[in-house]
Every structure is written in C-alpha cells, then in structure tokens.
Amino acid sequence: MPHELPPRPLPHYFFASITRASDLWSRPFEVLPLDRARWNNGDFVVGRVTGKRNRLYVCETRSGRMASVVRGDLLVGALGQRAATLEGVGDWRAIGPDLEMDSLTAAGLFGKATSVSPSLPDLMRLEYRGHVTRNGRALSMRHFIRHRAPVSFEMPVILLIGTSMSAGKTTAGQVIIRALKYRGRTVVGAKLTGAARYQDILSFRDAGADHVIDFVEAGLPSTVCSEQEFRAALDNLLGHIQATGAEFLVAEAGASPLEPYNGSVAMEVLRPHVRFAVLCASDPYAALGVQTAYGRHLRADLVSGPAANTRAAIELVKKLTGLPALNLLDRHSYPALTDMLEAALEGAPGRETVRRAQ
Image (cartoon, rainbow, N blue to C red; front, side):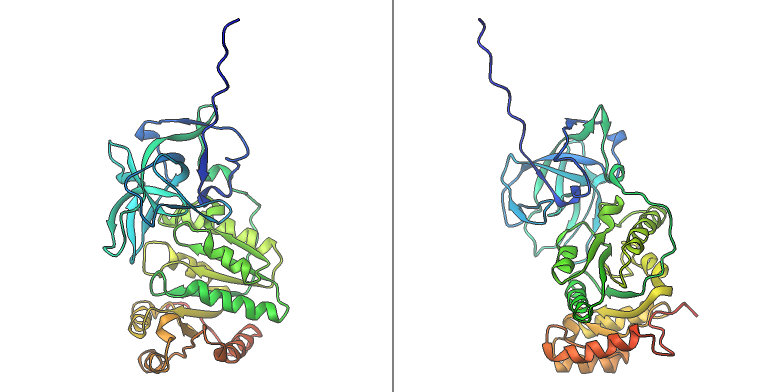
C-alpha cells in the first residue's frame, strides 16, 4: 500500500481584538490573495510578521489579553486608517506593490504607516498573505454587524472628550462609572470614536459597567471614515445601547473633537442627551485651546486629566477657562465629583452642559 502522509496541520493564527465581533476562530475560512481593486476598508486580512522585533511586536487578542509575536507568526486583522497625533498615522490605501503592511495598533488595525512619532520604535511589520474568505467571498467587519430596528435614543449621557489621545478620558470614565455603580445605577460604557483597541471598554467593564460596546461592533476598524459611514454605525450603536435598558451612558469620544475621527459628529448626535461633560486635557493651555476652537459647540462641566494633576494646574485651568478642574486620581476629589454628578443627573434647573451653536 502507498505510504500516506499525515494530515497537514492547520496554520496557527493570532486573532487580533479587531476580529472580536466575528466568528473567524470558530468556523473555517480560506486565505486568498485578492487584487488591490477589490480591497476595502474593514476587510479581514492575514499578515505574516516580519521585521526586527521590538516592544511593539505584540497582539491584543480577541479576549483583550496581550500576546507577544515573532517573525513568521500569522495575524488576522482588518484594513483601516489611523490618524493619532501622538503616535502614528497610516492608511491601508498606502500599502504599496510590495504588499508590506504595518500594525497601526496592537488591536490588528492594518495599513501602511505614513508618519510615526520619533519616540516610538518601528511599528510591527507584516507581509500581506491574503484576505479571509469563505466560498470565494472576502469577509469584512461589516458582515458581522448585529442589525436591529431603529429606536429612539433617550438615555442620559455623561460625555468624555479630550484635547488629544492619552488625555485621561478612559481613566475619568472608570471613576465616573464607579461613582454611578456605588449608587446602584445601571450603566453602559461605550467608546464611540477612535482606533480599535479593546482595552478601553474592558476597563469600563472592570470598573463595573453593566454593558460595554464600541464602534468595532458596528463594523468600523476606526472612525477615520466618511461622515455618512460613521453616522450609520453610530445609529446602530445607539440602538443597541438603548435596548440595554440601562439608566446612563458613559460615552468616550476618542482623540479630540477636532481630529478626523468624527468626534464632532458624535457630539452633535449626543448633544440633546448630554447631562454632564468632562473635558480631559493634557495641560491647562490645551483645555483653553479646545474651548477656544470649539467653544461655540461645547461647554464642559469639568476639566480632568493631566491638566488637573496639581493645585497649580487646577488654578491655571480656572484662570484660563473659567471651568472647575479635579484630579480624579486623587480620592479626596471624589466627594466633589459625586456632588457635581448628582446635581447634573438629577436635572438641576438651568443646566445645559453642551449647547447648540448660537
């Protein structure tokens, strides 16, 4: 009898957290290279790790855990765009004929880096191996959207905005969620704009949020996209949020409203429902900058983040903007924060934290 070769083992894939709304790890798929004319934002693709390893050679997996990767490993991610002011800028459309890609975030946002902060090592390099397909059909994030009938969104919102990335929005959200949960309230924690990372909404869950959700579940690898595409995704998200029946939404708008992440659109849609707004700023002058540039559309109730790290900073925020500031990492600030939240969320007369342009 002819000697039979053992079955060829299936490739081992790292499924980045950007795939978490899909079923790619539980159902078979094929990997087929596609002509560039058929590529689209949000497509699931496989990349083989190349380049010299450094601290950025990690993958945030679909569980949210971080896994180290080495050359030769196969990662499943999605094509997308990023426009981070402090770290890097990239776009899947910039991938050249050599089919070399970069992991623009640890969550598996794949594209070609076009501008990277000198404080960072080289982004993780990848070689495009093909699109994730079933029956010859390329699979995309949009194929796994949970659609629902349109509903009227009516939930009170605590809105977190920032002067840039890494301004303390997620930390502020955690503190506010805890404050609400200590009072027996039900809360949804959501990240409505930004670039795909799972850790932010997982930190909201760890803080006690009853439900968490973000734009990845609405089919977007990042919110650097057309306004029309973002509005459709946001409508879907708000429908799912309203259906939870929670009492409050703590909503983080990633980056700042002036960056190309559609944060201004999110603020416009949420404006009628915002009961308390926190501006997280990198420093007092950044808080003034956002107030000056966006003041016709926004009036925050509180400034937080590094701009409120010290008494001197808090006093400067007050002098520059007229707004109160609190260091939310200092437990002595909690009584003042809870008093402000209770006044706003109980509907104190005459409060309008976010107002329409005059």
